[in-house]
Amino acid sequence: MSHSYFDDLVASATVPTSPSEHTVERIHTDTRVNVVRITLPAGGTLADHKARNPVIVQVLSGSLRFRVEDEELTLRPGGWIHVAARQPHALEAREPTVLLITMLKGPGLDGD
Image 1 (cartoon, one colour):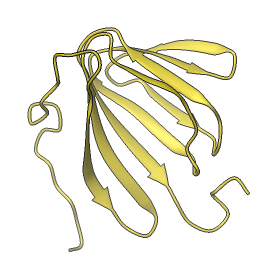
Image 2 (image 1 turned 135 degrees about the vertical axis):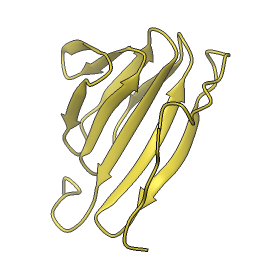
Image 3 (image 1 turned 180 degrees about the vertical axis):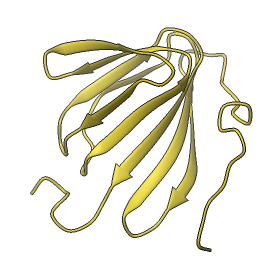
C-alpha cells in the first residue's frame, strides 16, 4: 500500500481509566519509520526508558510532563519533541492523553 490514512487519531482512540494501564497501537510501519499511537490515562506513566533510534513525540490531546536529560517539559496538544537515540526519557500524563510517536529507523540512526 502506498499510503496510510486515519480520519481522526484522537476520536478513534480509547484511553484507559486505570493509571497503571496504557495502550499502544501501530499506525504505520515501513523501512524508515514506525508510527504508534499511545494513550495514557491521567496519572499514567512511562518510566525512564531509552529508544534504540531517534523518536519524535507529538501530543494530539491531553497534556503530559516529559523529562529528558535534566529538563522537565510540559507538552500540550500540538507539542512536539525530538529525542536522540538512546537518550533516557520519561513521561507522566496530567490528564487523559493521546500521543503520536514516530520512531525513525535506517542506517546511521541507531546511536551506534
